[in-house]
Length: 214
Image 1 (tube, helix red, strand yellow):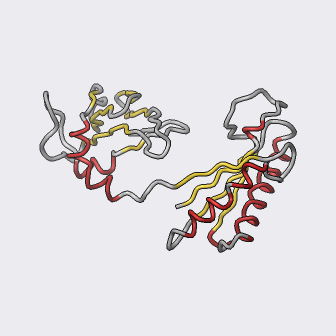
Image 2 (cartoon, helix red, strand yellow):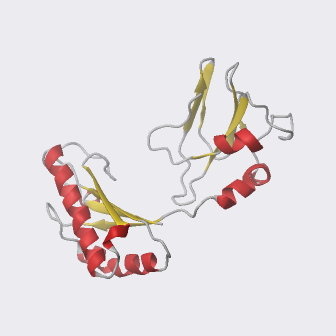
């Protein structure tokens, strides 16, 4: 059985459902789960407010979950059940404890850069204080800094530029008092644009660093 789609923002409760979920009845879900079936539910991402989509499949067929609280019972010996929409009460009853135990969603910040540069725009530079303040409130912070570019130039060069931008931001955060060992850097170059554009298109919103703090 497989589930999910590229860049999906859905929250999947399949693993939780294996021990907590129940067989679908005509009016509500109740009773213990048998090992040969798993309940998969699509939930809104609490950090972005988006839901995404999910493909649930096995050798007997597949089904797509596309709306918040869409659910299906995936079974090992036949195609997934038709989609039904769980109520908020069902989700809370079945998964409330598991959802409450999840770690808090990371706080995210986006900083923008001048064209072909690792220099922040003035507005983005002003955000550094907020980022440092957020990190210092955490006892054991984990900070991930990912650099991005627009599609101007060659992909290899843009990967390096994205990494240069991420490294520059890490340096700024360290200079502001953060422990550099708690800050990881990476680059997606031009491969993950915020705004889809043709090749060789300047787009200020794609020249960015995304920071996740948790």
